[in-house]
Amino acid sequence: MDFFVSGRLCLFGEHSDWAGEYRQVNPEIAPGWAIAVGTDQGVYARILINNTHLVFKTLHYPQMLNLPMEEPLLLGMAQTNSFYSYVAGVAYQALTRYQVGGLAIDNYQMDLPLKRGLSSSAAVSVLVAKAFNQLYHLGLNLAEEMELAYWGERTARSQCGRLDQACAYGKQPILMTFDGDRCTTKLLTVAQNLYLIIVDLAGFKDTQKILAQLNQCYPVASNFTAAQVQNYLGTINADLVQRAVLALQQGDAAEIGALMNQAQAKFDRYVVPACREQLNAPILHQLLNYIPLQPYVYGGKGVGSQGDGTAQFIARDRDSQAQAIALIHRNFSQMQCYKLDIPQTKNKHLTKLK
Image (cartoon, rainbow, N blue to C red):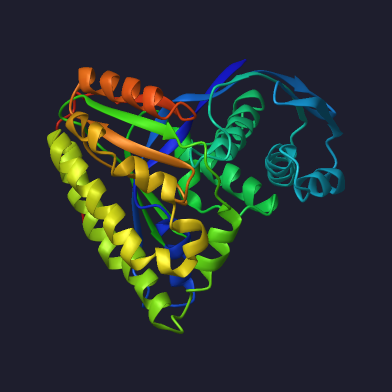
């Protein structure tokens, strides 16, 4: 079978997934809210059943994974620092839960940037989960595929939250809420076509360090900085996301841009002090504040764990999207831009928020 799984762009609400999980031990923490949508870029693969082995071939690594479908071997590979750890982690979960055989996966194309906050590892994990589900007729629904991929990543010792697996929904924008160990999703309608730009900043960020230092602010805030982080990822973020849901459903690109600018400003104020070394992000802020870019965009913000990894902008229209990309390529030649068009949806019913 041929498979494609897109990357995932978090429009609003980064970090709120794992933060909301802390409600299991501290119910005073507010639930997490996020809006995610699939990217045009992703992971392509041809997949066959292999009764005894897990085989994964990719253009990104010269050495192919070829591992017997045995629990100790899969778990051992999952807990290495290899790219294949995610593949093995999902296979381990599929084997222990459903007693499946193996897969032969030919990842012949991946146009999704790696380690740029676009859920490249989650896309691979969802790809493997979908393959096990469909080739072994497991009968899993979309949420259950996401759950299998999530626990596969956690087996691989990833610090990911449940937001990453939103790539399973493809180009459909979704609202996600995170309350302890419960994750809920709602499909969102879009009243007008929206034109976004994803920019690989060609910088550096240490996602593990960012996550480690922000997690130190939970489950109980021990100082002012930790309380500020919890306030932003909780109450402030919930307000921004709920306003962004309405703007999406009304097709109001200008309001979405304004909310992106607000989200970034508040992130800089409340969250950056907890990890200044990584989150000051001079390259990101240089581009966000670049004056010649402003006539073409309504606003922008950082992506994923933030830092100097990736930026997102919402353009004023399709022509402005093209002109903004040309401007960035001309004046920031090291950066790579990707279009993301969110199409108008036919169903105009508004999502009801609690």
